[in-house]
Structure formats: C-alpha cells, structure tokens
Length: 341
Image 1 (cartoon, rainbow, N blue to C red):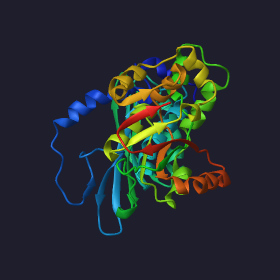
Image 2: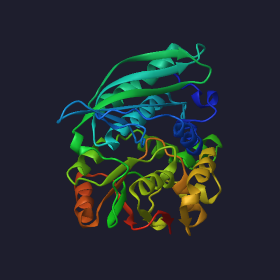
Image 3: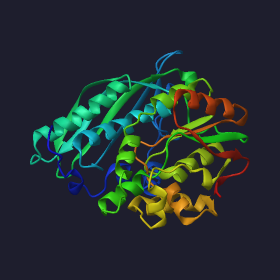
Image 4: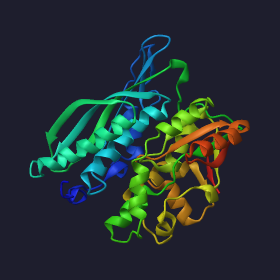
C-alpha cells in the first residue's frame, strides 16, 4: 500500500468547491454562440449535466468531462471520488456510461505510485459503473488534478433534462448533504469522529442504483447536486422549467456531523459564491445552519428528482425495497424562484 500523500496541502480548493463561480460561468457562456445541429439534443442552449448527441432514433451519446484538485489525502479515495463525480453526470441524464478517459495533472515530485493509486481508485469506480477506463492524458502541474471524460448512451426519448419540472411534482433527493462542510472542518481539524469517513463513503457512491430505480417512473426533471449546492441546482431546475420550487428545510438530509458543524459556523468559499449566484432567487426562512447546508457545495452528490406527486409513495417504496436512500424534500408549484422554509 502506498503511503498516504498530503495531497490536499497542494491544492487551493478541493473537489467541486473548486468549481468556477456560477455567476462568472453564466457571464462567460453568454458570449459563446451555441452549436446549431438538429442532432445535438443538449448542448449549451441551455447547458445541462452533459452534452447529448443523437446517433439515430434509438441511440444518443451522452458526453461529459469533470476534474478537480484533491479533497482528501488518500490518493485511492481521491481517484474514486473524482471518477464517481464525472460518471454521475451520465446517470443524471438518464444514461449509462460506456467509456472513460483519465484527465490528470500532477507534480513530478510526487511518487509515481501515488498517481498509480489515484488511477486504481478511479478504475474501480468506472468498472462499478459498468464502463471501461480506456486511457487518458497526463500533464505536469504544481497543483494535482484528476477527473474523467465520459461517454455514455441513452435513448433519445429517455433523456432527463433539468428543464421539465411541473407544478404538482414532488421533489426528492437521493443523498444526504454536507460534504463541503465536513471537508472544511477536516482541514480545520474540527471534524467530529466518523464524519470524514461517512462523507468519503457518500462521495464514492455512484448514482447508478438510484438512476436504475428512478428510470421506471419517467421523471419530469433530474440533475445531480455538485458544486453549486442544493439551492443552486434546484434554482436551475425552477428557472429552466418556469416553476417555483418549495423546499422543506426540516426534511433536508445531512451527513453525520454536517448540520452541527454548520451551526458552529463552518463554511467553505463555495458557500459565498453559491449565495452570490442563487440568493436573489431564493426566499429563505430556514435556520442559518439549514440554509448553509442547502448552499454547501457538494462533491459527487445525489440526484434531485422531480416527478408527479401521485408516484411519490411508490418511488419511496421502491428505494426502500432496494435498500437505497431517498428523501422527499419539497414540491413544485406555479410561479418562479425557490422557497426554503
């Protein structure tokens, strides 16, 4: 076993907390002319969790890329989390991953065995997703980074876009929140016993099982929770669907220790950036700790699922039967914006 390297000491920000600020990204993308092709089902107008290109009436390619600096010191866990985060974009579109390529940047001073452990962790998660890790590209960089470019497949009529939520839908979440808060507390030496281990286990969990369980219910809108936080991603669904999302703060699931750490004032830099982007669309009467949990940037987070409320009980029963986590956190109504109560 390779000795754990202090990878996080080489990174300015780790995981999806390193994501480019949503407000700046919005400005950047506004200047790019979207591609005009009838077979490009999803591109930049509007952007989603992945690009989708139709091959024929039965098949469309799902293509995504995601990478970031280390958020944990264990190189195998870092590789596995980065791979899970990228693969989950394909599951968020209703697709199945086929092929992945590594994107790696590492200082030459790091032992090559460390990069080997990163790749081993990623390979295990790619195989667990039902895909193949077929190669990649590595460059020198003072700050380590790792991720994947992933190609998947989906039926053109089986896509799960962000735009599509309808008034009367129930809103579900398939993983607890709080990875950013727990990781920040770990860096500060303030994480309670077991909190980091629970967060790492959650980030290593692929959304494959959840996506398989959801598929039979034909959801109206789906996305995964990553760097923009729950409220940022729910705001994307609400704004693109032309609806109002009403979330129950008391139902937001939290990783062990996350809510308590939030109450103590633990925050990431991503919290501020997410508020700058989404706060103008959010009406919140929730306690500050719950609000922080909802703005917290997540890495390899769960799926947000919107589907007609009459299917909610059966969906919950299906997840319970499969031993999968899911929590109903709100509803979709007429109007606009997001309410956190």
